[in-house]
Amino acid sequence: MTDVDLFLKNLHYFDKRFTLIINQNNNQLNIAYLELCELIDNYSSFITNRDNEKHWNQLKQSIEIIALIENLRNNSAVCIQIIEKYRALVLAYEKKGMSDYFRNIGDCIEKEFGDFQINSQSKVLMVGSGAFPLTLLMVAERTGAEVFGIDIDDEAVQLGRHVVNKLGSHLAIQIDKKSVGELEIIKQISHIIFSSTVSNKYDILDQLYGLTNQNVLIAMRYGNGVKSLFNYPMQKVDETKWHIVEEIIHPQSVFDVILYQKVP
Image (cartoon, rainbow, N blue to C red; front, side, top):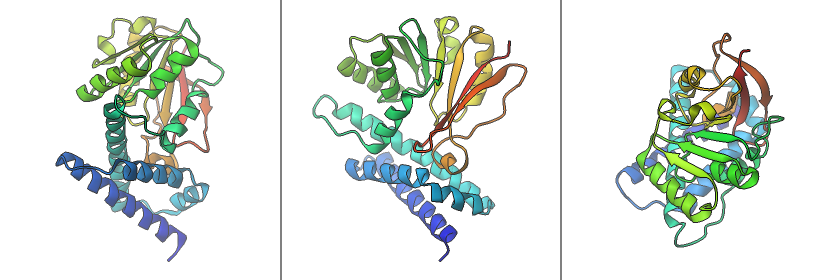
């Protein structure tokens, strides 16, 4: 078996495991939380393994492979949502250790905006804040900024508020089920962070052009190459509206970040 064949075999293995867990969740069966965390941690390590980037580049992009990649991207995101919701639900009863995946995310937040740092005067919006809004909590705690989160999932919004009440009731954090166009504060937002698992993030970016102030800074989490197994990849933008000000590559992270500002 060649290295590429083994790489492909691993992709099918992760796809099978993710699908099994999602089916269990949909059928309201008990899920082994620690096993799921271990699976996600192994998947994260698989994606950040530099050898696998080489195998990815040698993979022939057939219709079947493209479908497999899309399944892995979507299903790994669903499994992250399951973990986040579980962590939020058990927060009141016990303290679970932070998995490698969440530690990985936490490490990246420090470098999210490169030289364009958030401060106590900033107003930060997270698109796709999730059920366990780690980014919101860390940004608010470390910078004193006023932070807003939006998500399309009702349960994620309710659980996210629960987590903030438990861990950050002293912080200026607000979470809502709203679109960017429904946010009264949108013109005052200085920094916007997109979750890497928001599928229509570039459509939302296009909407933001007419809604936001001239100096707004956008941090778009994304994954190209082998990292697209876990994230939606970078897309071209309307060059009359947005330009790239910095690309922040995290070799040991499951996602990278690209910073956009409006064209002057």
